[in-house]
Image 1 (cartoon, helix red, strand yellow):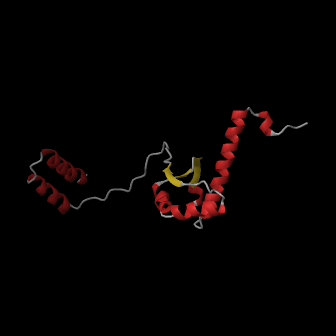
Image 2 (cartoon, rainbow, N blue to C red):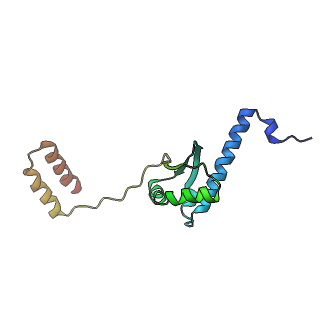
Image 3 (tube, helix red, strand yellow):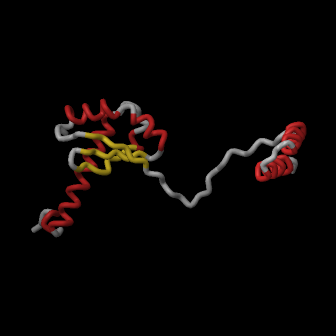
Amino acid sequence: MMQHIGRCLNPLMSKVCEHVLTLETLTAVVRGYFTDEDIKPHCTVTSFNKGCLVVTVSNAMWASQLRYQLPSLRDYLRQHAGLHQLITLKLNIHLEHTNQTAVLPSASKLSAQGRQHILHASHDIQHPPLQEALQRLALNQAR
């Protein structure tokens, strides 16, 4: 005879599983609100506690786009998802940490005339650290 999965877990673990399922359901509802398919995979509901729903996005660009939609998203969730207890929506940005080094755009080289202008301007600078930095910039660009 097979037992229900809830009976196999201790009560605390069963409660955690129910909480995860609730967050997954809320994530599906939030993603269903968006008409832009690009944003959907970047939004996840990570918490719903005491009337506060936290939506985590993968980067600042998505957070910026979503920030303007928060009032209408809150109204949508109250009306269409039955979250009448929803008081506030908060955004969280989850930055993924990777071991890959960032790819930076290649720096453009200064022209010989540009290097000369920087060197000439550095002679008029009274602040030694700035003067040295300008000279290093001009000399490093020559390589």
